[in-house]
Each structure stands twice: as C-alpha cells, then as structure tokens.
Length: 314
Image (cartoon, rainbow, N blue to C red; front, side):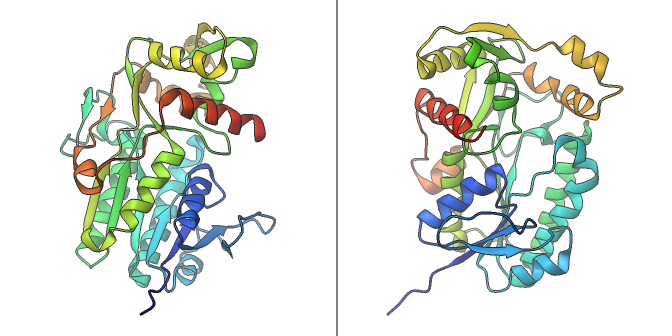
C-alpha cells in the first residue's frame, strides 16, 4: 500500500519565514508549492514554483487546489501593515476554505497590547490598544469564525525572528548591525526578558503540527517559547558566537522620536518600543504536550548560524 505525498502551499515563500518553512517541509518529504509574484525567484530543488499575486484571491485559491496545508508566511513591511495585512490574510483564508486545507499562520505577541504581562499563555487576554494589535486580533478572529464553516487553522505564536536568510527584523537591522565593529546595539534595558524565535526551529514546529493536522480541528493556537532571554544573556551569547568582546550600545530612541513625524518607518518602529520596555516570554506547555520535545537550537549555536546567514546574504 502506497501513501500519497502531502502537498503544502507556502504563501510568501521567498520571504524570511517562507524560505525557512519551505526548506523544512521539503526536508520532511512534503511536496512544496512556493508562491511568489516575482518570475525571477529562485527555488530549492524539488519545489514547485507558483507565480501569483497574493492580493488576488482567485489566483491564490487556484494555487491551493489539492493541497493539505497552506502556510501564510506573507508579512508586509511595518509601514504597509495597515494597507496589506488584512487583504493578504483574507486571500489565505479564502484559499483554505475552498481547498479544504489546514491554514497555518505565524502569530506574534502584538495581540496582548502595550502592557503585556511577563508570562504569555494561550488564555492571556488580548488587548487591541495598538494599531498592529487590532489588525492581528481581527485576522485571528476571522479564522475563528471560519472554523464554524469547517475551516481548520493553526496559529503558532512566537517572539521576534532571527536566523535564516533575508533581512528586516530587529536582530539584523539593529542588534547585529554593528557587530563587525565590536558593538552590540540593544533596544531596551538589558535586564528585561525578551522573546525570540530561531527561524529554523520555528519552521520545524510548523512541519510537526502539519503532520498532526488530523488532530487539530477548528481554530487552534499554540505558543512557541523559543529563546526567552534578557539583553545581558543575549549579549553574553553573542560574544560566545562572535568569539570576541562586544561593547554594549543603546538604540537612540530620542532621535527616532524626532524623525517619526516625517519618516513612516521611524513612526512604525517607535510604535513597537513598548516590546523592549516590558519583559515577556511565551508559555509553550500545550505545544510540548502535543509534540513532546520541541526543536531548540542552543542560543550561542543559533546566533552563530544566524550571523553566518547574514554574512552569506548581505
């Protein structure tokens, strides 16, 4: 008796999370369809290229025919969230509803508002007191409403990304930017815990959950603990990874504040400052109960690999 190979559609497969998830599913033996709107996109061996515009629902629905899983790895720039996050999520949800595939979505900690508590569990109240919190909560509630129509979905909530190819996250744009000069720039007090997710580990979690999709009916949500460390602990681990002493510097928030009224990116960055002023970590007990031991690359090793990725993809 032969077992058919399952198919996954990765939306935003050329993005940072998308590339990590594409590699993880391919390595696990899945047939991978990688969506991009760029005809010049390059793909790993065995990945089926799907050229379509993720904002066009009919194109995404067509791309999703016959798939078991859809991963929504579409992630607009900070400055484009208000305009693009909802319609992109709507395309992914429509594709899941018409194909019957399980929709997987990377969540974050925005849902818990400006005054998020230090321990974030699945039952932690969501507070829509920032623009991005409102958008995230709305998207996830639409997924929950779709469950009443038979759409299965899984949100995997994680901390800030590091590792993998591509740029655009706090780690590479701020923290690692001046490491070659012997300086680590940290955006907040170094004694506060901050949640991080090493992308190759998180991608493995997506695969593990996809392979258990038959047990995950309706709208499900899990937290991935990743690395919850203080700035001081990250500093020490980065010194290990770099093999040198690193001077600690601060992000010039006052300058960012002065620029914010005139620069959309600075304004969007300033809106996220609260995440560096509040200690927070994700509790992943339910995820461990389902999957057992979770992927967890030791922090110095993960940081060394992340820095090597940045050097290879400047």
